[in-house]
Length: 280
Image (tube, rainbow, N blue to C red; front, side, top):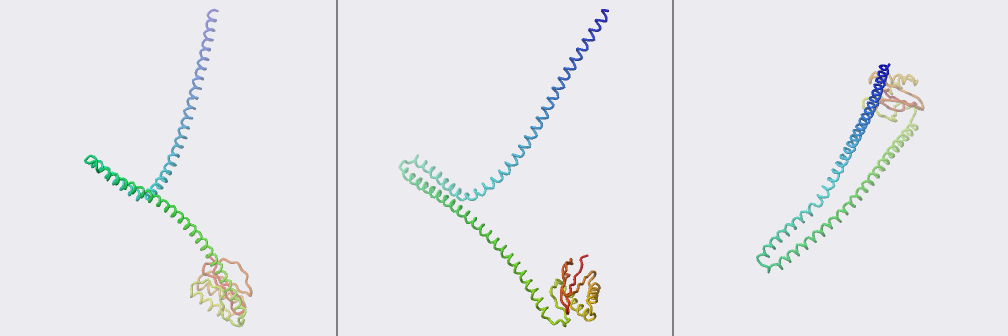
């Protein structure tokens, strides 16, 4: 019985040690997880800071480039003034060295050296005044450039207005030409079977001449509108590839799609004829 009790106590001790070991293991695992999370957070912060620093470096580079270009411009403007100042400073240095040598040799020449330095100071003040005058001239030049820009903008606006007026004038001329053609057509002799061109977009002279020739032949050979359109269409399909379309009537209203430079509208006799080539 004592042995059973001892074995029971030993088993309880083993279970207690296992539970303690499990707790310690869980605590270690929590610590490792916390350390892992902290490392990830630090890596993220490190990455974000690097990206931000890269962004700042790029911005500073662009700003530096802009500043350097502006400084180059300003340096070019001030270069001549600096050269004059450097020359005067060099002269001043030379004179001061001469003054020191002369002062060591003879103190009686100090008055002349003082006069020379006074003249040099006067030259420096004159150069500073010239520099100020140059700044004023630069300001005036910038104002003139601004006025020039405004004048150029006004010129562009006026040229745009002129272009619109030219377009309106062209449209008016086209409209007047159309009215003139309509007037000539209304006052023509309807018994005249010679074609009267209203609008011709055909640039090929051979095709344009064939329009008048074939239309005249069609109305000479046929009396009905159907025969005229059939004759004109077949002749143009035969000579200038398919597919030409021909519409005839007294007062046409139409909406069509045609190839570029393949369209002509004309009167023949008492009919209005539309001839065009359908797009492939």
